[in-house]
Length: 129
Figure (cartoon, rainbow, N blue to C red):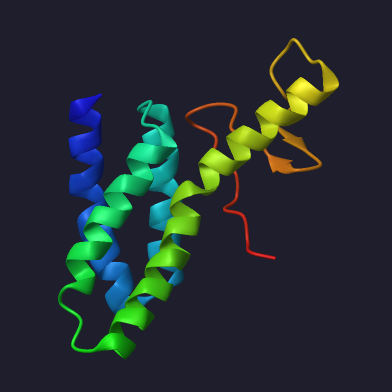
């Protein structure tokens, strides 16, 4: 796992910096895909959030003033939501399966949204309410 975590950090740092500079849909989609890959690589949610927070602290140290720091933190929060969306969908699928007493894998889509079913299948990135 340390190799996967190191690779995740190396991939997420430039993604975060690019997103904070451009704040576009491309960056959000890239974060979502990186979050899916982190799950496939068996990284935990806490590992992912720790990397995000460590990088954010480095970025915030470069802010010119409190206002810029706040803007950076808000944008980084938006990026984090997309980064961990895959973890949320997997948890919802698991909880739905537990609630219904299912012994087989959850369906590809359900009332709580798509569930990750294979590495080749990419469900649409969820949109905020």
